[in-house]
Amino acid sequence: MAAAPSIYKGISGLFQSDAEVKKRDTTPEAFKEGLALTRQAAASNRLPGQSAEENRIAQQTAGVQAAAQRAGGSSSDILAALGASDARQQQALAALGVRGEAYHQQQQGVLRQGLAQQAAYQQRDQDNFDRERGALKEAGQRNIYGAVDGLSQLGVYALGKYGGGDTELPVPGSSKPRRPRSMAFGLPVPDGLAGLIG
Image (tube, rainbow, N blue to C red; front, side):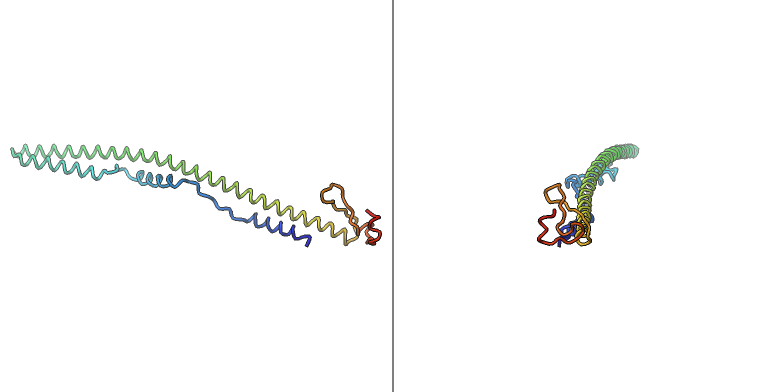
């Protein structure tokens, strides 16, 4: 029974060494949601609402052309009005495309910043995980070493007690060693003489 604490300590150390430490995700949910939206924006070279703007330009062009046809005039005048309205439409769409590309580049920069921040969160989580796992493993190893040391002392005591040696054991709470009563000179000591020896 004297070995039970050492055995328990050793088993505890083994479980501590093999214990699973879970990595915690400390990245804020609001940041994750914002990064997801930034990914979507950076994946396209179109402005938010660009389709609606293109439809507005097309409707405006159609209105100008219809008005030119209703106004009458010569065929050349009508064709000139239609050609001018088409040119203005293409210019407006081209300008819209340039703005969309600029917005795309801007969102790419925002995404790079977001990914860098995400990497910082993940690195911090990894560092905390490694620190906790290392501390737990170190505590487990200390328990294992303590158990081995305890069992070694018990073995030395048993060898001295039952093997006829003169091994001395430390007295609890004192630095002075104590000679076991039953192993002076390697021979059993009669109970009546135990007080005269040691």
